[in-house]
Length: 564
View: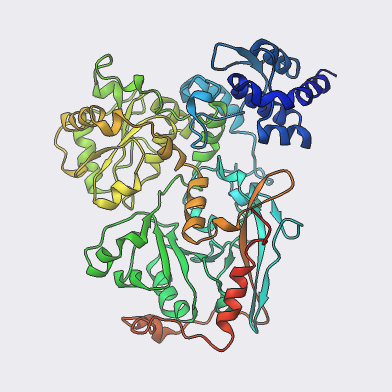
């Protein structure tokens, strides 16, 4: 009854909203809360318009109070407070909202939430009970729609293949942590390595939308298709030598999912006129003239977490409990004038030492091995991830040398725990990789000869305008899949294809490919061994009669003519 009463009061007051703008923000917040707790279409529409006004803030807060039990303090500008049961109404760090107009949550370290996190991390056992899920694909959490009044219907078929559009929700990307499988996650088609498939060979929690690329599908490739290639030289060479000759429209590729560098082969292929963008993890700046002249077509991708290790299983519950707050907004933690640097207390050191550069660095940073703590403790196999995070979260900085490739999982664990990583400054692409993120660069970690060099680099960065004048909102957003998805859709000219359902939920139009008849995964060894791909000297597409019209018709029907 109380909720119904509040709903009626909101309806009655809606017409007066524009006359009292001073309470407009508080009204919008009230409506967002009610939209969560009362998922009726009427309240949702009111929330979208932001049309509501009360005679006083106290009256408004009383209305909100009547709809929900007490759980935690929710602060509003102007001093009005209310208790709310919803734990995730608005997250601090959302790029689309003004920070001053948000509930103010208190940031808590992982160690402060350790018991709640440990309990939450054990809620997802595998069906066979043998192990726990460590990661979940965004597609596993998404909604797929094949037919709807609001979805433009597109399907084209040729002799060997078909392509059609389906709608996949976008909101699951908001809090999906980036990881090493994002190349598959973001693609329409994938060229996988070995047993790693995008089709239903994977367990449900790691199921992806993308279909495995088949040569029979090539005649149906449409503009803006995103192709994920697992980053192994033979696969990348195979794509450019055996698949690319039959692609006649602009496309995007990503090379991810391994420790390999990107771009990993034949730098001149980046100047392919049909290649819109080449995304890749572990970026390395190539000195080849063709790469330097086309470096704008290469986009470094953050490696993110490992889908095989229990990173997400521990970090996602923590971030939810912490309301996904950007820990770098409040810089008081890094005020060196009040809290002087102490290497032992402030710089977390914990990494494997299998390679010689890491061994040398370890000897400098940890001249004596710790036995009563994890930092500077060489044991890396038996210590639980949960325990590592508890200790790491109590440090202000952490050293993250290169892994098997330039980038490293550890760097992203640190970001998500509110720890500023110290990483190697490799080249211009390393700066682009961490753009908008708080990072201390050291030119060559392997050549560091004292702890003081690390401390000097930290002090220099903390005093710099790059740190002092930044909020790191954009960088925090890059730790979630939403940023990558939006970036790729924009580059592919597919943002215009985003549609909304009747409730205002947004979807992107994914391209679903299928084979008609027999598949074709044959390998032409002669093409693979060739030094140059057969199309390279004549890269412009050769269209058959009617092909260009087929492609234009596909693009023309991307959106409804009457859709805003």
